[in-house]
Image (tube, rainbow, N blue to C red; front, side, top):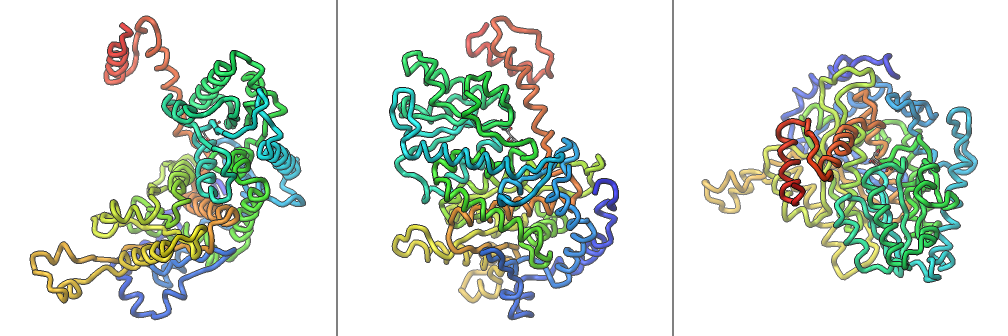
Length: 547
Ligand code: G6Q
């Protein structure tokens, strides 16, 4: 699509939306609902077991029509097809973005550089399953023949956030006799706290790194190797039974001392933040077992198919992406709050932050031209109901517009008295309160004195989506993650940016490498940074007694 698409603000649907926005920006959801008693039933869509109520967004039928036209004019259909065909849509890295191949059925054919990649995907999945079963059944044992009871994933960014989120989300299905931990931060505290109460003889490390060069991961992996060898009486042979790798870089893996027979591969066409369903999910498979992992892949696959084939007006990721664009680019909403009413999804907002913000946090188009519109909003959130007692105040009565994605499940995984009904009542109440607020007349009728009135009035008209599924299963999680992957893609496609690169992460990494010897060196090197950075380095050296 590069080059043959009009700049966003010159597309006719964009211009029409700009005019339309002026007409509808003052419309209140109270009025929209009052004028259309069936709105709450009409503006919903159900697909692959997920139900989306998008009626509480500040849209009319015309808004929706124009947004759908924008999708067409932006070549969304062609861009979806190009992605699924394996074209090199990640143009700045000259790679396809083919995470859909990770969940393709065995008989699918997806060709990258003349080769069908599906058999390789399934070969890795099978190898993961054999390994996971051996560990879970106590057949893969540690160096001293003890059973493996602890699994620690060492990785960062895309090699950490997905596995952590999936482990937490699917804990209900996990092998409870085993302990799962995740080390990502180069801050040694992360390592020390994760290992302090574990027996190395019962601990398996998964070093997850696409490149196997990432500073944080390699520093943590080396500390893990030292910890293991030291605690197992200096026996270097122990590494073979206590370390496996997930990587695309076999050379580096064997340099580290891990037998490549114990390496689980993936491919450069899988972006880090799109890799939780590749071998990067090995910790997930160890926790929930291969069958549950495959069920999760099935969920991903169903959402992929829905995204690829459903007409845009009934296409969940497309609708969510378009609504996000509407609030972001026209109402000027700077953020999106993702609020799961499901404790198991407590890490879902953090996972989404990387997915959305690393993907669409871009300031130039695919053609390298600076954008003259906003791209990714800031994603953030916490599980309900906790947020209600802290930051929801700002969503209800603050000066900013914050569209919310509520996520809830009709059934709970572990029933405890009335908890689930109370939880659901809260999520519905929040969406209702945000949309309709409380009018001055209502506040007055309660006998509120005049001076207090402005404080007690809720303006309402705050948009939200409500996603409702039946139960949080591995399959549902797969659907949910794929929904957001494609929602993010939809937005990136309309903004005409590359959602699959991440050059912005590079500069800090390079500078850190330069500063490390300046901090560690026995003598102070000549510092050539700005005066602030130089001063900070000198201060740290001095305070830690280095000169
Ligand atoms: C994700 C990013 C980034 C990456 C980490 C870890 O899309 O590229 O978060 O996943 O930097 O990289 P490695 O897996 O190579 O260690």
